[in-house]
Length: 86
Ligand code: SF4
Image 1 (spheres, rainbow, N blue to C red):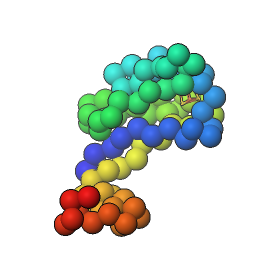
Image 2 (cartoon, protein in one colour):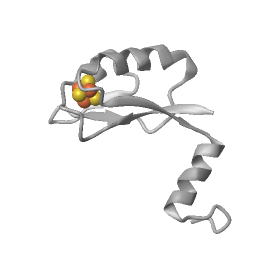
Image 3 (spheres, rainbow, N blue to C red):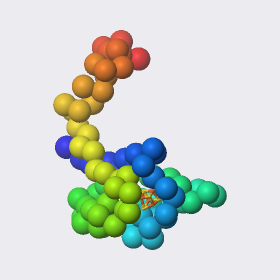
């Protein structure tokens, strides 16, 4: 089980605070919107991630658990089957 950062793009207002607080996983694009690293947050960095989440003025950041169970739900929702490898 691991956790990844997710952004609610509707709520995000490009304040950029998250990138200042958690540069290990968040960069900013040219417009100030976050670019999230495409990898799970290492356990030793979860406190930093939570600090960035708590500081977001629009509550646009969150941690999402990913693992076998979550991956299976995601495949079911998308209609993809792991057996077909699609
Ligand atoms: S701090 Fe929140 S609102 Fe600002 S860029 Fe990050 S996610 Fe978006």
